[in-house]
Every structure is written in structure tokens, then in C-alpha cells.
Length: 144
Image (tube, rainbow, N blue to C red; front, side, top):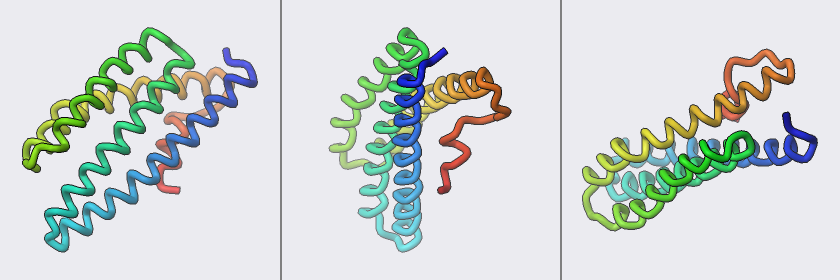
């Protein structure tokens, strides 16, 4: 399915995804701490950073899926690019509720679809190589 070079590129992307997931966990802890201490300004700052990292992760997932299917990756990339453009505008809006609603109704569905596509690609690859797994590597090691 993939030669040694392709496998190496996938490993590199997987490591980048793991790193972003680790950073997302750290930022989530910061957001939770800010919320517990009543720091609304810090909560909003953390939400913006979480969204930035989430969109970075989404871009990596597009790159990963592209190794398996250009048409699926292109569809994901169109959605990702739209989110990046919208993010530049919505982050300037001084309304935490509007920002949260945009995340809930726009970011979450695209990220969920991207995660599912990448997970399916990774799982199929691993199973085709004889590995017995039920989930992709970056979900398993998210808490490293």
C-alpha cells in the first residue's frame, strides 16, 4: 500500500498530531483553571488558543488523509480553509457566546469528520499490515 518513504511521512504526520493533541490537553487544563478561578479573560484566551490548535490539528489530518485519498482530503481541505478564514473574523468579535456557538456549529462537525476520516485511514493501514488495533495511534497515546 505505502512504500518505506510513504510510511515515514505518515509516521512524521502522526508524531505531529500527537504533539498537537498534547498541546491541546495542556491548553484545556489552562482553560479549566481559568474558569475555576473566575478569569473570564483567560478563559476566552484559552478558547482562542484551543481553536487555533484544533485547526492546526485539522490541517494535519488533511495532510494524513491525502496520503490515502486525494478527493477526500480535498473535501476536508475546503472545509478547513473555510474555518481558517472564518476564524480570523470570529476571533475579533467581542462575544464569548458567539465564539462558542461558531465553534459548536462549525468547527466541531468539521473536526469530527476529519478525525473520523484519518482514524479510518490509519486503522485500515494498521490492519492491512496485520496489526490488531481498534483505534488509531494518536487517540491511544493522547495522554503521553
